[in-house]
Length: 115
Image (cartoon, rainbow, N blue to C red; front, side, top):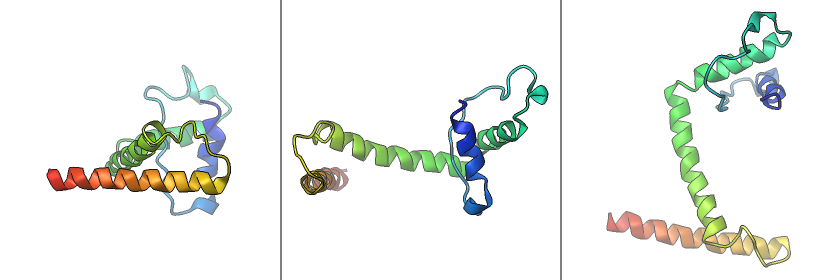
C-alpha cells in the first residue's frame, strides 16, 4: 500500500480542488497497531478519508459505471483480439480497436432490442 500514499496526497492538493476521488482502499484498521505513533499522519488521514468515501452512494455509482466500461475493454481484448494484436503501427491498431468497438455496439444493440 505504500505506493498509493503519494498518489492519495497528490489528489488532495489544491491543484485538484473540487475533485472527489474514488480510490479503493483495503478494509480494516488503517495505520497498524499504534497509528498515533507513526510519522506518516498525513497519509493515514488521507487513507481514512478515502475509506469513508467508499461508503457513499457516489462511490457505489462510480463503481457500477466503471464495471460497465471495463466489460467493454475486456470484451475488446479477449473476443476482439486486441490483447495480442498482430498488427503493427498505431493507425492499424486504432482501426482494429474502432472495428471492435463498433462490433461491440452492434452486439449491445441486439441485446437491448431483444430484451
